[in-house]
Amino acid sequence: MPARDVYHDAVKQALIQDGWTITDDPLHLKWGRKDMYIDLGASQLLAAQKEERKIAVEVKTFRGRSELDDLEKALGQYVLYFDVLGELQPERLLYLALPIWVYESLFEEPLGQLLLRKKRLRLIVFEPTQELIEQWIPSV
Image (tube, rainbow, N blue to C red):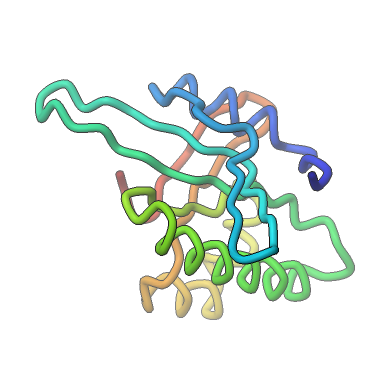
């Protein structure tokens, strides 16, 4: 299993505070002979509709050589997990969790706005110190 991200526990606690139940830590996927591990799997019961929502969350710190390099790696991982998850657990939506300052630095810029406008990416923007979810993009 891969090492946990620095903010793994902060995102886990933020999800719990937001009403989610952690179902997998990590969420194991197997495709052929390849094993993959998405950081967290979670579910939430919508009482009004008596329906369960399921998500998978990949946590990213963005503390590498450059933000752009980290973004490229995160997007590649996201696409891989998105496709495999779509085949194995199509009811589960994939989210990329990132700290609020990464969102402000990357996704409030034209490049990030382009990625969001194309609707290829779901984000959870979190505040790690307070263990709070600031924003779901798109909203849940």
